[in-house]
Image (cartoon, rainbow, N blue to C red):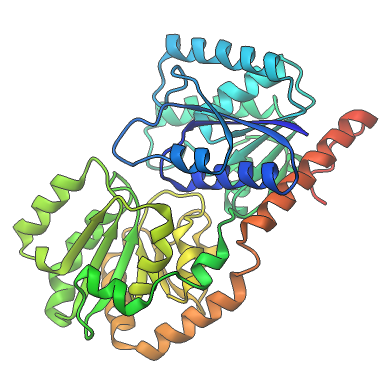
Length: 395
């Protein structure tokens, strides 16, 4: 097939890693002709361009395809996308996330692309947006859903929320979980002891990792809020924050103000290949994000064999089971504190939860499984267009 993928930024992030793995699998495993159209990678998060080049993938940067809403720039991005689609003449255009999804679907539909597919990695509307923005995003997503043949959700929760907002039709949706290089997590490259030593963790310290951009709604401030009480009950607990972002300095100042800086290790940006060994080096993972599709770090932690603590948002409950971790109501600081102290005190529970998670989710989150299911979806959509029948989204 000739395929175009469109995403706003190729930064270090879950949606971007998902997209790059899909492009890589389609190119190397199915020998498709795949082009990834993306905007510039602005910001402190780091990017995946070097990884794409190393894997021999075709990537084209459209400077106008930016994340913020800028009407004149967006209009130029739309025309650039249409021109690229006319030049490439793809069988499939597959868009990702909201901004690229709206512009990309509009361009592909206008150019009469045979199969237009969109992936919801996380919805742009919800309780944390103001009502005016919510109404705008919902109307745009409803409009864009009428300009594609199929919609992929990275978890069942995304489908439920989209349909509840009137976005798309039930027959358009299918769930395909976000894939990853499972072997790296099942068998991390370096010994746990070496990684812990590099992090400065003592043998008797219990480390809880958080893997996320240091950005609003990611929940780092909730951890800060309970840190002093947690350390008062168990001074051997340590928090490892993996990632960077615009809130790095304000968070560091708050840690210092509260007198808990000694218990926090901020790694900054790390290459994606280091995530497996860092997760193996800690004892559990906390993901207190207030808005997410299905955070990749949750299955990643489980594949490494580490239990997870997460707020009950979006798709978290699809992997954070009673057997794999602790699911909390968003903003439940007392529950967060209790969960951390419980897992810190119960190594047997941590081991049992991690072992169950490895056995339960290893196959489901392999990137090979994701790419196979996505390509099968393309085939069904194209076949339906040829025969004139409704698209059979579900296999």
